[in-house]
Amino acid sequence: MPDILLVEDKDSLRRVLFLTLETAGYTVTEAADARAALNEIARPPHELLLTDLRMPNGLGLDDLHAARADVEVPVLVMTAFPSIDEAVHDFMQKPVDSNHLLLLVELALEQASQN
Image (cartoon, rainbow, N blue to C red; front, side):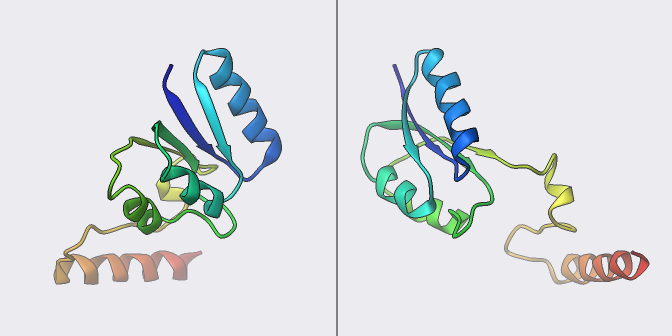
């Protein structure tokens, strides 16, 4: 059965997720923080990374890209935010278009001043 690397800092939630995945027949390796996750990502044969988006000293997207440079593994991200819209005003993909940047800056500042 595929091995899943589960990264979650909250013990109780990590335990529930572990049991859910294990009961479904998956092999699960746990990591409670970003450092442990980065160490584990380097050790095959993880076939999926299931990680919390926000953790203390969290696993950033840059860390994920660097860790996955040699090993291609799908990533599923969990978050307490129902949507990215609740976490940020907006986001841009690089390279950034100057006009789009200025528009988003204006909109974000306008929205912040109304709150």
